[in-house]
Image 1: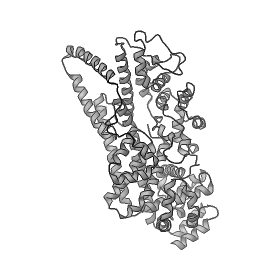
Image 2 (image 1 turned 120 degrees about the vertical axis):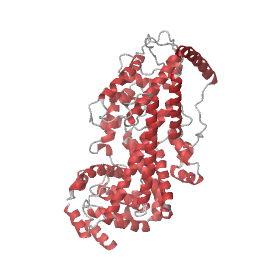
Image 3 (image 1 turned 90 degrees about the vertical axis):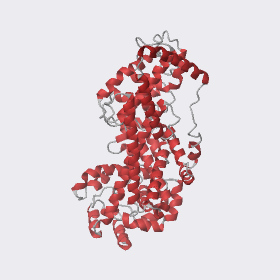
Image 4 (image 1 turned 60 degrees about the horizontal axis):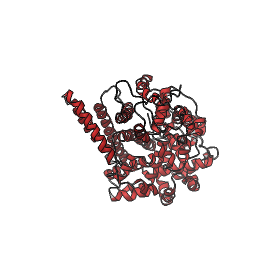
Length: 378
Length: 201
């Protein structure tokens, strides 16, 4: 990590690119970790999202362990993660809400192919950054009171919510089964598996099963609306379902338009840089390095991905990219396509021999080799 | 809230893979064709990285409506394709028991009649139609949303928004990357200078 960081920042580059460097270094790290499955991104500087994911969910996940409502939680991932933020219960509540889906992050990411079941079960997580204002948690508390009372009093609020979510399907039938007359009397002390969700009717409200079920449904919907409100910028001040829905619709439309526009721009960029060639370069350069250095590569990776325009950063490494695009493309069009069809990540091994002759990646030994090759190829 | 790192990574991986597979034909396309090919690739990568959710299935179903895309999708998704397109997305309704629905309708209508009489003003009706109009609009926007009920629609919309945002971010990053490498190709940096800088590091 250190040589990589220094290569990004250290070697006499013009200082104007520093703001972009951090962002592009992160992106490079991603690309590189993509190509190299053994790259341990979670232990990278900052820990970023895996930490975010793991930490607030940590305790909810532990609690998930005890009752064991069937989710295999990410014990391995959570253990290794640090505690970057003070863990407030708002996070935990939100994490608990989504912890139903939370599965192991690191194995899922390191397994080849994007269709692993771990990914399927894992939604974009709600582990919000610490900038989530604490007061946002407060208005939600009163609405959660019902869930607290629903489950055992001794447990913390998130439990109630979690258990309700875990048995969401059964709740309707359960509520109709429980005698509406005395919903409050039964507190589940065991609390591990809740076949029934006990709802305490608030003062002045109807207690028949239909209204209870309706109320539960409405609260679910309101919870989702609140989440959406937080997601869409500028929506938290708006009251009223219709207006909030308006904003959500506008936001979705704008995102879709943005994607179209970006794809148009990418298509416009394309004639200059051949897509296939560029990707060959990326994989070719990242691949042998990943194989050679084993774990996460050395200084050359970010330079070769070269997303930032720091001109002199790893100059030689970057330079191969444009002229060699055509070179590689000409030489390896057929082989690459067949190899990559099978597995998006396994190609490094295949490309090791041809690519090293062109690009040559051992930082210590191949520098003179590299420059010689470049001279001849140019 | 934001998309998880693993999702972004899987998305990028899928996207690169799709680009590689489809890039052979890029040279002969016009701008419009390239743009739609890129958009298709991005959508497929997003759907396959996300896994199996209602909106991903709806999206893939919508994309497979054209025959040319279908073979492409099949190539990329492999065995997942068959699994993902099994329920026909238009008519996939939540199975509801008729007896329970009838009973609840009866109870609800009775309660509505009791409550409506004292008010006289149809404000709730107005509010309800506004919300309904917007729900229909949202259903049309979210892929596969036509057959979802209120709660699942919101759920899928939440997920969809997060994924769309991740998609836009990723494409933006890719764009800056490509432009940066293009700039570097045009840069006047000479070879010995670069070698010196590299060795010096």
